[in-house]
Structure formats: structure tokens, C-alpha cells
Amino acid sequence: MAAQRDAGRAGADGVTAAPAPPTELGVALGARSYPIAIGSGLLDDATRFAAAIRGRHALIVSNEVVAPLYLARLEATLRSAGDAALQGQKRGSPAGMKIDTLLLPDGEAHKTLASAARVFDALAAMKANRDATIVALGGGVIGDLAGFAAACWMRGIAFVQVPTTLLAMVDSSVGGKTAVDLPQGKNLVGAFHQPRAVIADTDTLATLPPRELRAGFAEVIKYGALGDADFFAWLERHADALLARETAALTMMIAHCCRQKAGIVARDETEQGERALLNLGHTFGHAIETAMGYGGLLHGEAVAVGMVLAATLSANLGRAPHADTQRLVGLLDRFGLPTTVPAGLDPDRLIGLMQLDKKNLSGSLRLILWRGIGKADIVPDVDLAAIRAVLAY
Image 1 (cartoon, rainbow, N blue to C red):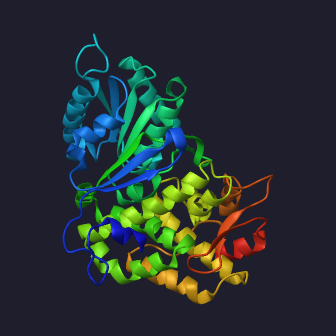
Image 2 (cartoon, rainbow, N blue to C red):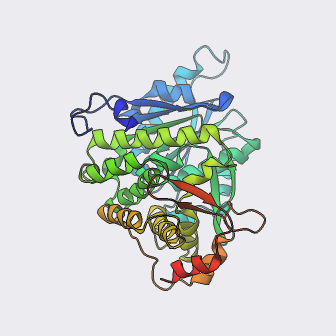
Image 3 (cartoon, rainbow, N blue to C red):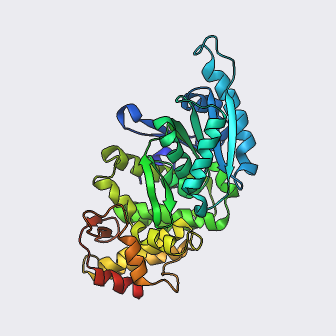
């Protein structure tokens, strides 16, 4: 697995014995390229933040769960970063940086236009202009929401992703997808807006609740399932170390996922083709989340169920071996993730929600299916009766 090269000298089983220095990656998008840093203690790295922050106004957007743990540290770092970044750059300007904070309620139910409006109000109150920066401190909900607000404010300002959950570190913080949800569906209002940097301090995973950690592993498993059978097998071998939050194993895993996604995004930034493969399990999963009112399953849990549905459908259509579906179910079970549709959800209601998915074209339902572990495909015109049978099983 390529990620093993980024975590220092590995032992025989591929996991290092000592903590690795920060792993430095990047997303290559020409003028919009940006660095990804993964490692311990990065919340205190003022030099790194100084390189990412633009202008004299910084708004930290976080939530009521993450802020008590990490907000004070980030504010102190940004003050130091602001002083360093302004030296010699804006002669005659007041020293220092104006830093404000907006705390939002926790959870997917609050990833809404109303929450985005609160970010706009906070930016207006601090008289933020086009050289302001939003810093997203939190998980995928905060990152998506803050990035969307950054894309909209004055037609686009800078933002920095500081992910504090596993799911955000391996997936949502990278790639520039920003959005809010509507009652009709997830992420229906959004924009592609790349961050200035992704700074992932792996120490924050120590305070992540077990359920949130497990949910993040669904997105990790997705990377193996869609295009990397060797990584899938590595996860099978190292599940215990990862669940025990062993730093070296986690860093190695996060770096591998980020590298895989960065490569795909560089080749297909706005999801015209290959990038859609990253949605394996998501069309089913988003429909389940929406049908449950964004309050039943966590996003990663819904994606886990969605991947099993996609794999089962693939096998039923003769595209993939049933044995690979069982292997996927086994790995998801190992990480404590759900693998069946929650009781009480109507298959026709779920299909109706799936038909609002952004991957669909001209009314045709397109799904990400597979030919087995590591071999995902974009499949148009999937038979609705076959989908309904899988959802009803």
C-alpha cells in the first residue's frame, strides 16, 4: 500500500513502531492547488496556518461539541499566524488579525440554508471583505457548510479545512465539494470551491466518540471497495489496530485515502466522470438519510448500508460475485457498521429520493456499482425493479 511510505519506516506488518512526522500531500489543480497535512500537533502550527490564511479577517466556524475541546488552541494559533502573515505584507495596516467565531449546533440536521445565513451574518458583522478567510473546525457538516458559505460570500473567499473527525479527514475535507441539505435531499444546494489548505491534526481523533469513529471507517472502506483491492485487504489485516486508534496505523490509512482522492480530484475536479466513483454507496445512503430526516443514521453508517446495497444489486445483476458482497459485509461488521436497511423505510420512497441524485442525467438513474472489490463502475439506466427488490429484501 502506497501510504506506508508516508508514515516512516514500517515494520513487517506495514505499521510503524514510532509516530510519524506530519505527512505532506497535495491536490494538484493548477492555480487552485493546495496542501494537505496529516499529523500530530498541527493545531498549534502557526507557520502552517500563516501560509493558508489570507487577509486580516478570519471567521472560525465550529460546533458546540468541538469548540470546547479545540477552539481556544486554534484561536491562539491564528493570532500568531496572523501576526506572522502580516509582517511586511501590509505596511500601514494595524497589526494582528481580527478573529471571530461562530458556533452552530451539532449534527446533519443543521446543515441548512438557515445555518449558512448565520455564517453570512457573522461575516457581515465583522465587515469581512473578499480577502477574508473562513476556518472550518469540525467534521463533515461544518466543513461542507463553511465551505459553501465561503463559496457564496462576495462570490468566493478563502477557507481552510481543519477536520476533527475521521470521516472528514479521509473524505469530505478534500476535493472542494461544499453544500447544504434541503428536506428534499442531501447536498442539493452547493458549489465546487477548493480550500486553501487541509490541516488534519490526528490528535483530535482521541476525543472522537466511538460511534463517530466507526462511521468514518465506512468512507475508508469505500476507497478499497471502489478502486484498491490491496488497500481493502490491508484494512482486513489491520482492523484491530485501527479500532484501537493506533496513531501510526491511522496516519498511514488517512494518507492513503487522501492521496487516492487527491488524484481523482486532480483528474476530474467537477465530477464529469471518474470522480463519481467516490459516491459508491452514496446514492442509496443519501436517500436513507433523507428518508430518516437526517436524524437516524450517521452519514458514514448510511454509506455502509448503501455500499452493501450497491454490491448486492451488482451481484443480482450478474456483474459481480456474491462472495465479494459477503466479504464487504464482513469488513463492515468488523468495524461495527450497519449493513441492512433500517426497518420501516418504504422502497418506493427511497427510489423517489434516489431519482433526485446529482449523478442522474436526463431523468435516467445512474448508480455506482462494482464488478467486485476494487472495481467500481458508473452504470446508467439501472433497472428500477432490480433496485426495488434490493431495497425491499
